[in-house]
View 1 (tube, rainbow, N blue to C red):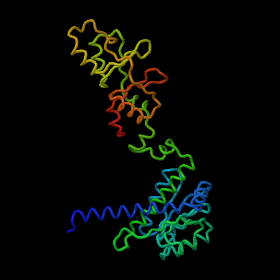
View 2: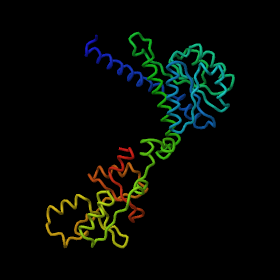
View 3: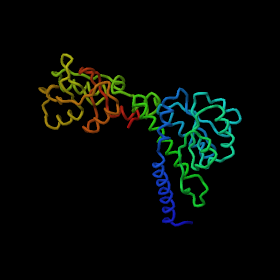
View 4: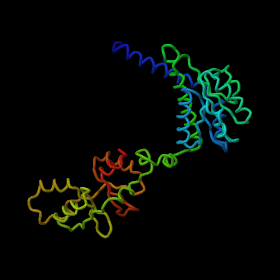
Amino acid sequence: MKSKKSIIDDAVSTLQLEAQAILGLIENINDDFVKIIDLIIESEGRVIVTGIGKSAIIAQKIVATFNSTGTPAIFMHAADAVHGDLGMIQKNDIVICISKSGNTPEIKVLTPLLKQAGNIMIGMVGQLNSDLALQADFILNTFVEKEACPHNLAPTTSTTAQLAMGDALAIALLNARNFNEGDFARFHPGGALGKKLYLKAGDIALKNEKPTIHPSASVKDVIIEISQNRLGAVVVIESNVILGIITDGDIRRMLEKHSNLADIKASDLMNPNPKKVDKEVLAMTALDMIKENNITQLLVTDNGTYFGMIHFHDLLQEGII
């Protein structure tokens, strides 16, 4: 059994090697990289990403990142390509072929076929004298000095470099397309991520009641209105104008100070400066306001008029916290 220190040393050494490999890629971001971005942006086709072994797994991740950031992409396994999957490649598609050595048998069979079809081929490769590098129209150099594997066999540092280069492509393409949060939301509508990008304060407020009270209402009426709507607060309104908000905390503080409640009205209890947010504001922004102001309720308005209310618990239930 290895010692604790030895195990930690192994982990640190691996991370250091992989970090160095990623930093080493910087000098490989050259004119070819820029031309590749321009070609993909101008292309009417898709990006086909292919590879074998661990490189195929990296290719799948790159495809997923491309698709989620506005670049249509398809994964094609290099071994399956010569058994029918070449049919997925259309004439305007650009092919990115990933291989550390660039000399695996499957890659050697595949590259001439891609050249015959006339598709632009990009080689993401670690050996510049390899078959893939010589056949490719453009090269993304992902050379690494050594694998993190102590035997220099298991793909570790090399696949990290491939993954990082794929991310560099994706982000450069994203920025070149002016891909924004709204675009991202269209491709990620499901789950918590999607909600953070598209769910608005008004969407949540619509699900709640709209507790209101007149400024002359009694303490009893205020308590009843708060209790019935279960939002922990009520909005004081007169002639459709928001005058303030009364929370259950305001009620408790009032009871601590006063024993005679007969003459106390809603206008005496209210906070005249409630925090508000427009219904079109993202729920995430509303959450930030709630946190910054250390409150649990937030008024939602529509062009300044009372639209509804959201509670901190609503945001919890939506899963965006």
